[in-house]
Image 1 (cartoon, one colour):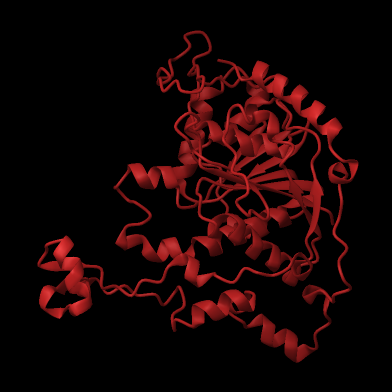
Image 2 (cartoon, one colour):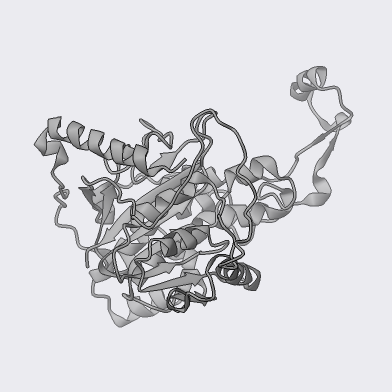
Length: 406
């Protein structure tokens, strides 16, 4: 079923509700910030500049993050899991563990590693808005659903499978692209306009880029991913879904292999989507092969928040003043959602002269409530989250929209 009729009805209902709300709540606002000397604007003498230049990356992180990690006596780079000492013999456990043995009869217990949980490494993300120069504004208008975009879904409670994509004999491309329904949300949040230059910083496997392309709005769509295998997947999507006869559309697509954490172009794009690598909750629950929670990938898992925050910093540097960035994940991890956003905004405030505002999408996403189950009263500071449910089995998906002011 096409989502457009339900969405249009939701937009009208939202407008009626908005008329009844207090104007003070609806008016976009900016927090009054105290006069604080911004760290990135402080004039340093030569000795201070030299000392800062040789600092390691971790030492430029806010103290609340670094101190927690150092309390363990380990940096993430030094984290070493002792695989040879994972087995505990029953003779080695004390009287406290004997109770466990009563319920789980066993001769051995596994799990003697020196685990450092990700939430313990970055625990104190408690800076106030004024500490990171954050301004807020409310997006009063609903998310725009472009006319050229065709999205189909099953009604609530219908757990049928979509048919496999079939090749169109005339166009020579597949007739549909199947993906998690929540993947639509970050692209709609970007609010792509006609002839804008768009960057998808972590584009593979290509579903969100393809949605952006289907709006017919981008003047240029840059799909970036670091690994060759993932770039090949992007080329495959273009070949499978964009007819060769549409040369004008194909010419709008550029596939690059830059390091997203150090993207070379600055102030160059109207909109940037940064769908970061994350815990991929749904995949982690369903697949055991190469699972991010496997013992062999513990170091990789613990470094994810650092990578995510740096990708967002890079995205805010790549977008032009007046443009916007949408950060998204497919995890429910507070650390990788609000936590990574907070870390990135703290870096932006301390190390650059960029000014920004976080856009509250609470009202803007309401017309999509028939499609998604949005998390409410979860204490989210920056973004919105889609929660999977039995009747609306989409997500999880977290999005945060940030507008660059200067």
